[in-house]
Image (cartoon, rainbow, N blue to C red):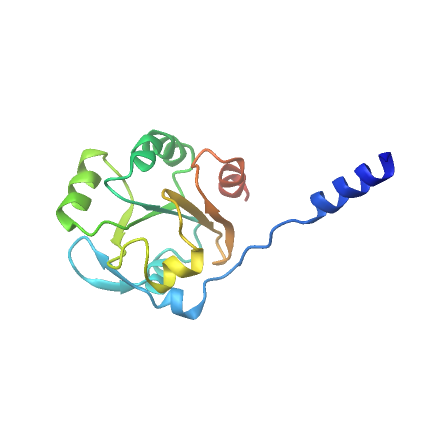
Length: 163
C-alpha cells in the first residue's frame, strides 16, 4: 500500500501543467483600444516594451476582486519599478473604464479589449474565465507566468525578481 501511495504522489507531482511561452499569431494581432481611442495590436504593445519585463493585468472597473487587488499591485510597482505594467480592461463602458483608472490611480499603459472578456483571440488564447488575470512576459518576450489570478502569487514575484 505504501508503494502505491508513493507512486501516486510521484505521478501527481510530475504532472506539471504546461503553459504556452509565446502568444499565438491571432492573439498578437488582437486589436486593442488606447485611452485616446487609437487602435493598436497586442504585438505592438509588447514591442513598445521590448527588452523589459512586462506584467499584464486583465481587469474591469466593475470587478470587485480586481479592485481589491489594486493595493497589492501598487506594492509590486513600488518594489519592481523597472517593470512595464500593462492593463487590459474588459469593460464595455469606456467612461467607466477611464473613471476607474483615475479613481484607483492605476499607473501604466492602459488598453481596452473591445470584445470584453468572453470573445476575442487574446481572451481565447489565455482561456479567460476569471478576472483579474495576470501574466508576466520576460525581457525576451516569453510568457513566464500565465493566467495567474492573484497579484500576490509567488510565481509573479519570483518572475519579476529574476535578473
